[in-house]
Length: 143
Image (cartoon, rainbow, N blue to C red):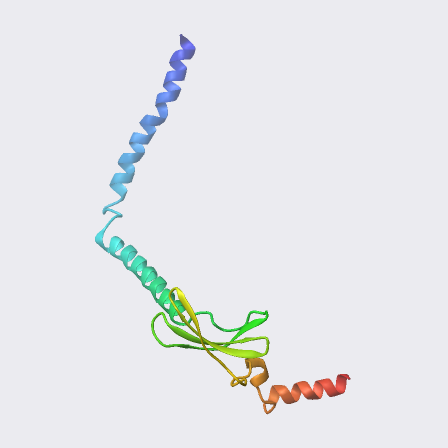
C-alpha cells in the first residue's frame, strides 16, 4: 500500500508544478503572441514567396531551354517564339539544317535549307577577341 501511495504522489506531483508554471507564464506575457502584426508579417512573407515562384515560372516558360548545348546528332541552332505556345526552330542534323514549327501537340517541317544559313554558336565566333589571340599564343609556345 505504501508503494502505491508513493507512486501515485510521484505521478501527480508534476501536474501541480505545471499548474504553478502556467500561472507564472500567463502573468509574464502581457500580450498575445498571435497579434495582427505578426500574422500580417507571416502573410506578407508567404505572399512574396508565392509571387517569386510565379515570376520564375513565367520566365522559364517564356525563355524555354532551346539552347542547343546538349550533345548529340541533332542540335538546335536557333529558335524564335512567335506566340505564347508557338515556336520556330532551326535544327541541324547530319550537316543539314531543317526549319520546323512547334505548337502544342504539333511539330511540322517548314523548310529544308539548301545551304547552312546559320553556323553553330561555337563555329560562329571570329578570332578577333583577346581570348582567341591569347589561346593562339599559348598554343604556339606550348607546342
